[in-house]
Figure 1 (cartoon, rainbow, N blue to C red):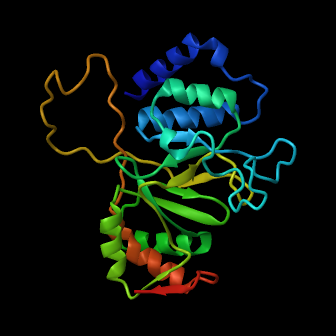
Figure 2: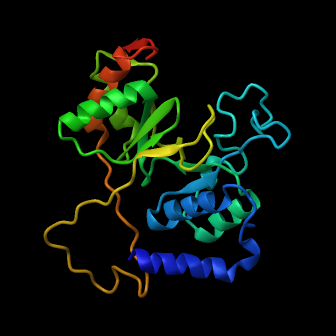
Length: 253
């Protein structure tokens, strides 16, 4: 399946030679390929982030001079423009070759829980010791984001209401949110990376029989990636964030 997908992506690039990034543009192939992989192989809706100012690489290209996440947020296009269409993705990153890759969370796409890097490292050690299978983990120098299965705001609210407290440094990226993906430049400096790379969902012992209507002729099925439920990881994340230096104040419920 990967070989089929790879050939199709290559044919798309061959059909659009004018949209092929120039080889001298730093980081272009990696960012475009990462965005196409998210959109086509995993069916994750993506869009380009605003990026940094060309005149001053330390500042965000948005109009806000005090932007708290320079370069690493949606602006134009807005978050609602996120798509899995490879033609749109190719066009975006051809015209903006250094733009960060943003995943629009929620709906059918993954959601996420993010926390300070030190606390996240402790939480992963605890979850590994429990034998918990984790999904993808996105890491920046200052914060890590654990991708989880989609959840609703109502479900998240009930889950957090049951806690005595939740550290304010723990952030939830659900419907209407976004997560910066590798290999984008992090807003705090450095580069975004996979601490835990995406892995496939285990296949069931018996596969359902597919009819002709279930699969389009010649279509390559997207990979189904493993994502844990938010309930499975939130206790470890709350505890790690509460005990970590600089973990944030506690929000009582």
